[in-house]
Image 1 (cartoon, one colour):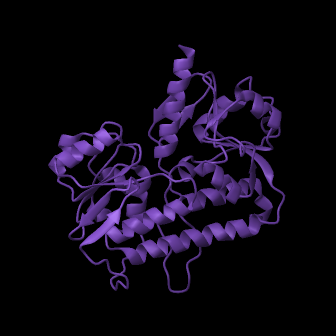
Image 2 (cartoon, one colour; image 1 turned 90 degrees about the vertical axis):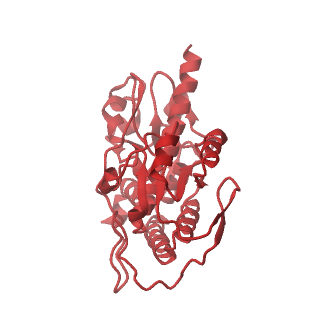
Image 3 (cartoon, rainbow, N blue to C red; image 1 turned 45 degrees about the vertical axis):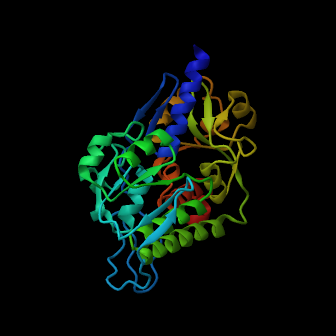
Amino acid sequence: MKIFKKLLTLGLILTIVMTGCGTKAGNEKNEITPAPTSEAQITVSPSPGEEPISPTGLPEDTTKNNVTKYPLTVTDSLGTTITFENEPQTMISFSPSITEILYALSISDKLIGRTDYCDYPAEAMTKESIGDFYNPDVEKVVSLAPDVVIASSLWTEDVIQKFKEVGITVVVLNEDKEVAGIYDMINLIGQIFNCQDNSAKLIETMKAQIEDVTTKVASLPKKTVYYVVGFGEYGDYTAGGDTFIGNLLTLAGGDNIAKNVSGWSYTLESLIDADPEVIILDPSMKDSFISTDNYKNLSAVKNNQVYSIDNNLLERQSYRVAEGILEVAKILHPEAFQ
């Protein structure tokens, strides 16, 4: 039974990380809860004449330089070819990451449905909810009659087929292991919805902020760091070296103690042996983590080097990961940002 519970916990944690849902992990149990809305924004200084990007979108560009020509044929992350005869006017998002990007690209007026976990920006919560992304309400989606549904790779082929059978166009966008994958996703969304100027600007802004961070920390000694995905009775979980979050820790100037681990499962013994200088976790985990016997003797706990950060900044693969990298870098190398 304990083995089953551990496998179930791992499955839930992987789902949470892939979708960017808020977590509460501790010695008692792992729970899934909607993540709190953050008011954080990309704060890169704009170029002369430009406005900063906000969660509710880039300034409207009335003179498009790059216009999508329809019919447009694209290939999604599953290798499926989809042809759009005209610019889609309505959409439903089954991914919090995608919902954030839609708002940043100023095309939220096309969004007519979202999941319960699509909570950023706050305006997204005013859109029609179609439930969760595990078992989508096909009938409700059909009643909304979207031109396209955009989903994450968590969907099974059976779910995708259900939508195809009722004539709903589905585009599946996979989560990636590196930031470059977000650029590809933003670029594809820009093509589909004829907002290529804004998608290019969003990518440029992300790259500028990340480059600013990596330049500042490049010559500094790397601190050993551990990112808590889950912990407690049913195992310890972190971001291995081949994960998206692992990539972010490296970009922020950290030496991930799990860099030689593949995936998310870790051992308490390895954590104790590595004894990282810094530990980063979601605010909902901190009190329980630092007060639990297995962890309270770690050097980072004793030295008050356990920091909380909104996990959505790292776990949701949207434009806000640029801010997540900056926040982690400030934790690891505060002297570089004074």
